[in-house]
View 1 (cartoon, rainbow, N blue to C red):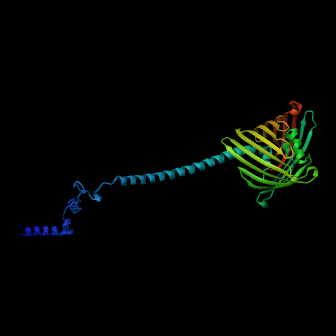
View 2 (view 1 turned 120 degrees about the horizontal axis):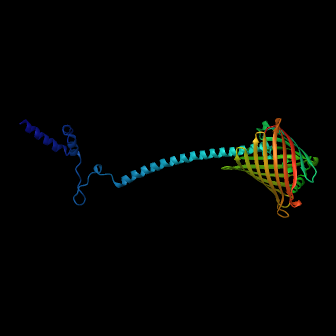
View 3 (view 1 turned 60 degrees about the horizontal axis):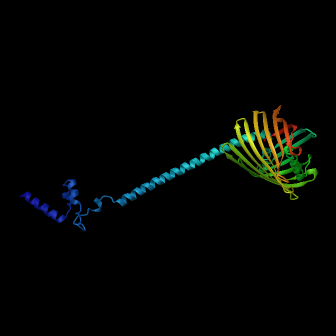
Length: 377
């Protein structure tokens, strides 16, 4: 009797609680059965009488899968983009560092040889105090011996943050190696003679490994008559694999509005740790002269040891007016050595010149020079 009463009470409770079990009864029903009975009834289909499962039991749609895949692809793309940016940044740093090492190595080699010869390329940009004295004699066949004395004094000014140098010097020594027509034109332009000299201040706007910009203001004393002048100068280096290109542009403007514009391009390449090859173009334009003067030069430096260096040079001097002619060919071998002290040098430079005014017949000659340098480049 009690079992029947319990059965009827259970039916009454089921009827009053709807499709789901009340909490008390659900506690005694197995979990799979309770979940199935507690789920909402399927809704009738719109057409065909088929039922449509509820959204919670439906399989994910294709649109949802596509959106998820797109999001994953975007995340992967963003990750790859960030990695590529990092790789590019690292590669740029490596390229810059490699370029800097190559530039510094090539320039260090070229400047070592120029410093050993106290070349104007190094002397003009030196920002340390030094004094250079030189005595030379140029002996050429069928010509008088030419004696010369040179002075180059440079004083740095630390008060002005090493940007300004005071200079006292004679005319450039390289003029004595130029052909007679160019020497005559340059001396006429500067109204210079062997006793002429100049005093000036050079201010460096920028002076780095790759670039130098400076302005020189001073007074020349040709024939002891003061003549103000202005000389801006620009130098830029470009490194290409095993080659170093050095571009140098300068303008010398005098107070009478005459000027010389001089362009020098050096292309240097180390042959090995003891030899350097240099191809040079050196051109000058004068406001009071017709035509253009230029020199195409091939030079090989050979370091025999730290105290002895040889220089082998082939020069070709041209002039474009009144006719474009090869004015002179010059072959020269220069031997330079330190002796007794590190600041004492002597040079012996035998040479053969083939001037146009002598129908390119060879003219032998030799240069002898003694030089002393106080300070360093």
